[in-house]
Image (cartoon, rainbow, N blue to C red; front, side, top):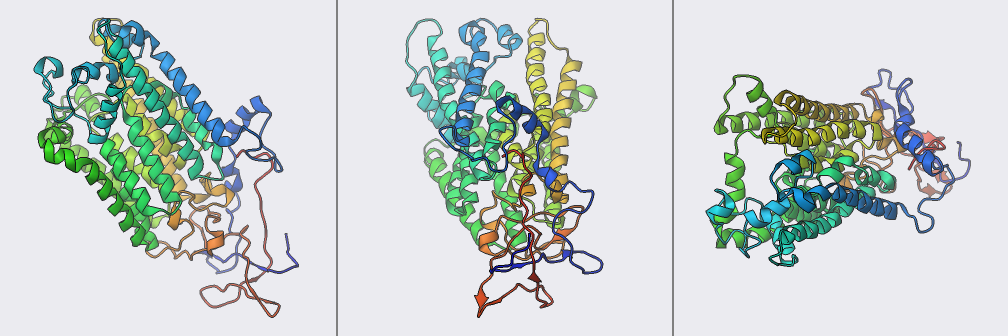
Length: 554
């Protein structure tokens, strides 16, 4: 609409790459998704159960049922359902032969490692050598230091006793309660990273793969620390974000991969100081956690790293599929070389796309892709590794349809691996060919979701996060910042009050300042002072204000 009263607003700048240099709307071109990218048909259909999509004038978070409370309670409820799914193992399956825990798909490392890693006997992780009869060749705990501390705290909280298998049951229950807190933290962080999309956390909370795999191992601890770090980065607190990323890396190795996307985005924006602060914070916190153990028990501390390096081809991986379907022989050194080379090649493609994309990619898009590439070419894929990707996938591509398609493949793989292992114990189960099909579906679904995110990067009009006028809500100091180094035309910075309000272009066109943004400019002696383009021409004039379509979900 046209404003007749000051302050005046500027028209959008011409799209970069327009052949005639004329003004064009900053929204998507005709025939492109436009603001429809911000609508989620699956969410709208599901919302009919609770009254239908939110209207234009509906209040958000009115009353007790705020989005964050809904997300938190849903997380607790789904996590509890996952615990119920493990009940057949909790009662008998973990203790009377391996078959039941496979046929009921309720296996967990947690109760088995309570005794096998010496927690039941009071051994101190990394310091005390595990007896041969317990560790089956594993002399020290093979987990990073912060995860080992988490396991030890749970052991302190576990009541002892000699009755049957009660200590293992209690140990799993204590860990499940602590991991539930981590799951809630992850979902809430996803809700808060995108302030305009607080209900995106429900995509994490309602994830079937999360409910099924949350208590297999301790991966949720690193995920919670990483998401807090990403939330702090989104609030423009790079040093604090680095501290949390370092802690997450002290719990699991994959969170360090976040620093790669941060490097690429900060290079494109020419903002290296925040990156240095983040890296410094990560080094400090990781060192504070690891150095004492490294100095006192170096052999025990190094077990995680040597175990990872010496591990051969294992379940769920592309390499297992190749070895078992062909006559190819892959020793440990050879598969290490191939996996490293393939992963580096994937990351190089990611780096090139970062600098050729018409708009600077959003941070969660690059983080998801970096971790997904690592998973696709890793030597092993344990079913709980899906927990690494779930919150990152929601932040990168918050669309129910896409996430449910990917999750379906992950749930199938979850069931397939246990049925395959059941077959190896002599029980009826899934033959090798069926397991190979499940691996292929997992790899294909993950690769497909990566391609969807790559498409969103190269055609930003399809990005559901940017459909409401946002730039990169998770970007922190990068949100709305100008480009400095890119293989596409330069993007000017937005004024601080409008950062985060960039409407993307589509099909490779780049709106320097898109339509729908209203600039509040200062007046001098009653005369509006309009922005100018790079040629020095005044860009004063009318503006358009656009809002989300009525009925669009939050």
